[in-house]
Length: 146
Image 1 (cartoon, rainbow, N blue to C red):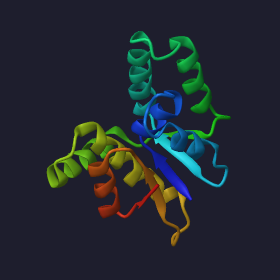
Image 2 (cartoon, rainbow, N blue to C red; image 1 turned 45 degrees about the horizontal axis):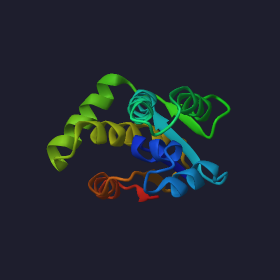
Image 3 (cartoon, rainbow, N blue to C red; image 1 turned 90 degrees about the vertical axis):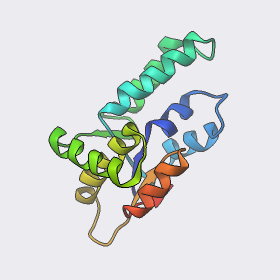
């Protein structure tokens, strides 16, 4: 299954003291899962990792290297892009309809635009997040929670 992985899940894969760390690592290690994420994820997760490292929760360079490796061409997570105008329009619609945070809507918008082109017509797309509200909206938009 093609699954869009939100920043909240990806960051937990690198921070061993986070609740859900082992589940996030297992998702990255699942070779049956085709993982994708948006271009903003690199920035969002890097910010979380730098803040965590600077508060004593890990080695900054090491954490950023892990992220770079996982989002590289050979890594387990493919970084996907969609036209900015389309993403912003869809994210705005999601925010207005569901009242969720802008970044959560941005991830959902990218997933809505990109994932249908990556799956077979009858195949579901997954959405992995730690945010319950974002997950509920993802289900309303036709994604399977992962």
